[in-house]
Amino acid sequence: ETGVTQSPTHLIKTRGQQVTLRCSSQSGHNTVSWYQQALGQGPQFIFQYYREEENGRGNFPPRFSGLQFPNYSSELNVNALELDDSALYLCASRPGPGNSSDEQFFGPGTRLTVL
Amino acid sequence: GESVGLHLPTLSVQEGDNSIINCAYSNSASDYFIWYKQESGKGPQFIIDIRSNMDKRQGQRVTVLLNKTVKHLSLQIAATQPGDSAVYFCAENLGDSWGKLQFGAGTQVVVTP
Image (spheres, rainbow over the protein chains, first blue to last red):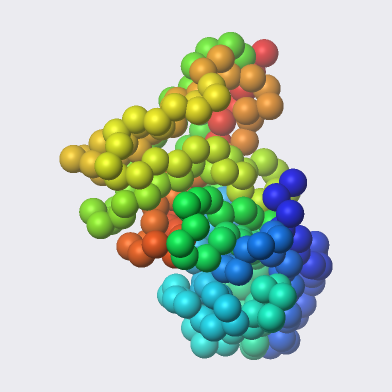
């Protein structure tokens, strides 16, 4: 186990609804990234948070937003859900800059199904 | 109907044989590469990484080879075991030191007895 936890494990929503996914980073890790993994594909980078600020964003629309809290846990919010948002959402944590290791640790993911 | 995106390349390997998984990366500026293993229902698990100033790195039963000239990465698994059955992804750093990664499409490895 990596020490990165995500909740919920599974979630079913309907088109147009909003969803919030949660991630607790590994102890001591202040940088959290979110990825979307569609079935049968590799993860796609959504955005990254460092010390509560967004630190880079992939090619995702503004209805994908996030937060990071002082304890470094993070939320991913998706508004106006579309069918194509159905995917496994992964959270990864790592130490911040200046650390000798670049290794990222992934959580088990949240499986979102949009009907 | 057919589901989009389920046609991962598959490598079938007999238990005890060596496996070689290949990956082409896209960004010449990438300076850090990682191989991940993903088992069904789990998040990606770090296997081994390599920086662009190296062309080979070895771990326990695994070796990563990097050919920057042709932008090619490979993962070799020695003496493949049933527990090695999973999807394997290569990932490249998206051009900075913050660990934003771009993943390849993945290869399904099936180990047969």
